[in-house]
Image 1 (cartoon, rainbow, N blue to C red):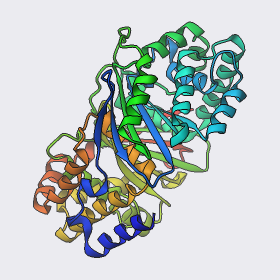
Image 2: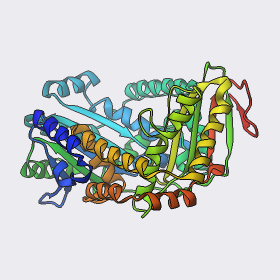
Image 3: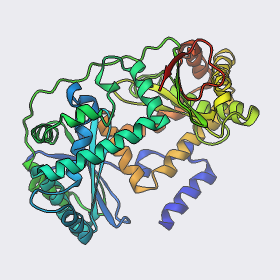
Length: 448
């Protein structure tokens, strides 16, 4: 760990944004087993654990049938219950005994499962995961318990202002598409889900056709091949045809939606069209996003809306990558300041489009982006997350090198031309949830 700290400090002092490449950070190799199962592997001998992340494409909630919304989320809860014929506590004890952990991350497109354990017991942890998939607990008692817990979460989300705002936001962004599905479903759709639905969905999701694998930690290629052939070969190579969600396009025309809710704070989401990571202007957008609403107090939005106006404790933007790519923003404020926050965001965007950015600001942002990336990759879980993201988005095994080089190549003159042609403040979608003290002009009000 000390060597890692010294490495990072050395490059921070020497301006490593011009020196670090992907091979200095980590080297990804592809491992292929005897039976043709492949995995991306990053060795980390100074890490006490081994991590296996499995990306199951098409396993996300956007693929839920309209009559069975919540099915993908319910599957995660069922698998967490363990193996048929045993108790949930037995399953948990088996994992605890070997220092193992199974974590599920459900997105709109994919289901990601990460299994971790010490080197000597990682095979046992993966065996437990595979057994839960092969023999899920689908008895009436377990299903009733899981559904009850699931519906309780639904009810909590129904009153959560951030969940409400996201639901309304995605209704506009993804009309008539599975990407507007509510992750947890609805009470009536969850009630309609039967054991056979869960069983069929599990068989369809957990197969080798749509699976990619990332491995990180204190292990070797031969050990990985053994795991792939001994356990994952059992996953089928066939799947039933699944109706894919309609491919959405981010099209908004400056809609403003206010959801009335009697709460002390106002939650504001806003969105603008984005770009695919494979687009030639993507790195211009990465630098623009960092300057506009990146971390810290120095972003344009934080400077204008928090530091100068005092309307919020925090406002940020991020790039959202899914079936559609867009720039997504979040802020909270008092109910009476919601209109001013919206106007402040539009003011910043219009000024940015009109005046562009200085060379000093752009170079500082580029350096900060590369430095942040290197510091982030010093943590194993972040490195694993990067591997998974690369696999989910089909970015290729050399993406880290391309990313760092792409950031370095951004020039202020090209970025300012990009800003003028790309930014369209009049198209920004706003959704706010809270008590309507001062109505936003032209907003569609949705009482809740």
